[in-house]
Structure formats: structure tokens, C-alpha cells
Image 1 (cartoon, rainbow, N blue to C red):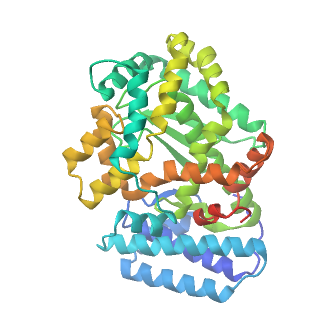
Image 2 (tube, rainbow, N blue to C red):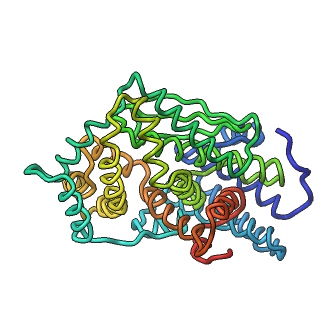
Image 3 (tube, rainbow, N blue to C red):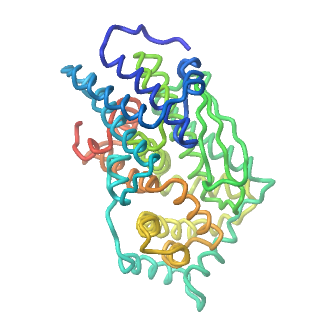
Length: 414
């Protein structure tokens, strides 16, 4: 990898320590290091010279002290230092959690992801469920009616590769209309089983990603655009490509050669990946693309697409139920049976999806806020009054390729 020259800068010293500390935490937490493409010997040293949690905690404190001493004044350096400080603080919390500390859902959200999700009672979702009740009348439960209707939109396994590839290609074409990507960038699509998630981007460095789609559960036609945009274009793959090209190679900022999953960076990553879906396709554009391209590829009836799109817009309004269910379940006010009931009757998931979701909460904790809250924070940050679509794409690209922390998204212009 060709890097920009490493000029003498105290923040560069902090950045190297940060990367090494992330890799050290990864020896205690198999999920923590989501991507790494920095010096291979640093990874090897993390494995061969494993640090204790106490030693890692001391290292984080020392890095924060060095960062305070650096006291940058130039705007770009200030933004870089602010991001490093937030990431290091989040790391300290993760180390404490690995050492047995228990946090409330909201404390975990604030300390790991620099954001807290709003709370909603069950009654808040009732009016939304009532709208779906009206859309799909019948005597069964609303959840049962939703699952019966959605069963018409499952992509057959033998058609899945073609449908997903078409969705990813369309997202890539639309992304390239607004900014350039390296000519050698590429995504490899794989299908897997036995996961708690529906899709995952494994960024490998050198502008390459492996995108895995979990086929444990049925995959519905709407998920093609969702997953194609979220995992690839203009979502996670593009996000990582821009960080590698513009910050790691372009500026020599090695802290972006590693991605710690449980950190404020994830709210930016998941938020931009989810918002990128609607930036890439307006409701009208998406319906037209799905009817004309994806439905025929999947062998589904395109005349049903408008009603299905309407249902999915209503279901999307229930997204924050995930946060409220996870909070109550993880804090113990909902037992497993109660959480499953909420997931089925409030979030309107099928039973098998609800069980998979609980597994995700168990593994990932408060991470769930990064999808819906992250999307809304990114949307509010980018969609300024009077901005054109072109300007929104430019702001989106800037957000993905320059240091920003979640709390700064609440203050326009930062």
C-alpha cells in the first residue's frame, strides 16, 4: 500500500498507539476488529504479545494524555483529534465491559457510540400497527397477515445471485454518477448460513470487499436494494474505500486502517449505509427499478409492487421498536418470551426472524441503535433546507471520507 509521507506530528504518534490498542482489544473480543489493513507486523505483534485488559486500559489513558498535550489548532487537525478522542474513550468503555462492568442500555449507547436513542412506549407503536391493520384487513393477527402477504415476495434461492448482483450494480452506477471510485475497487458476493445478521461487509483493504448474505431465513425482494446499497454502493464498501483512499493513503492517517466495531465510527458507518439507500433511490425510482428489473429477475408479479412498497414504508416506521425491545430485554424488564412477543406483535417480525434478532441483541448489545438512529442523524445532517440532490451527495461523500463524530452531526456545519 502506498501511503502519504508520515510527517512529524504528535497526533500520528497517538494514531499508531490507537491502532495497536484496537488490535490488542481484538485479542479479548472476537467481534471488535471489523477490518484491518495496516502494517501486518502490528497484527502479528498483537497476537504474539497479548496485553492484559489492565495494560490496554493504561495504554488508552496514556494515548488520551498525549492527545491532550498535542492541543492542535488547525481545523483539520482538530477534527482528527476529536475523532481519536471519541474513539479512545469508547475503547476504554469496551475494555471495562470486557472486564465485567455492566452498563445500562443508554449508558452503553452514549459511551460506545456517542448517541442515545429516544424511548417509546408500546402504545406509541400502536397507531403505526393500526395503519398496517387497515392496509391488510383480515381476522388473523396483524403480524400473521404481514407474513402471509410478504410470502409472495420471497426470492427463490436459484435466483438470488442474479437479483442481488443487479441491485448492487444499480447502486454502483448511481454512486459513480456523483463521485469517482478507484478503478480497481470491487466486491465479491457470497451466501452464508448460521449468522445473527442478514448481511455483512468484510472490507479487506486495497479497495476490495467480501459481502456475505445470510440465507438462513427467506430473503424478500425489497432486501435486494436494501442490502445492495447498505453493504456495497453507496454504503459500507464505498465508506471503507473512501477512508482508505483519502485518509490512509492520501493523508497517512493510520488510525483509519482499523475499524473497531463497538465505537462511534459504527454510527457513522451504519447511518450512512442506511441513509445511502434512500439517497441512491427515491421512492419512485426504487419502485420503478424493482418493477422493471428485480421483480422479473426474481420471477415475481410486478403488479403487486406498489402495495408491497407501501407496506414496507409503514414497517420502516416501526424501526425504533428494535431499540426499545433491546433495551428492555438487555436490562431485564422483558424476559425472552416477552421480547419475542414484542418482536412479533409490535415490530411485526416473523417468529424465526424474532429469534434471530434476540441472538443479535445478545451478541451486539446496544449496537442496534446505529442503524435507525444513525440513519436519522445522518439524514438530518445531510438534508439541509434548500439543498439540491447534488449537494446532498457531496455532503454524503464528505461525511464518509472525513473525521466526524456522531454528536457533531447534531450541530450543522461541524
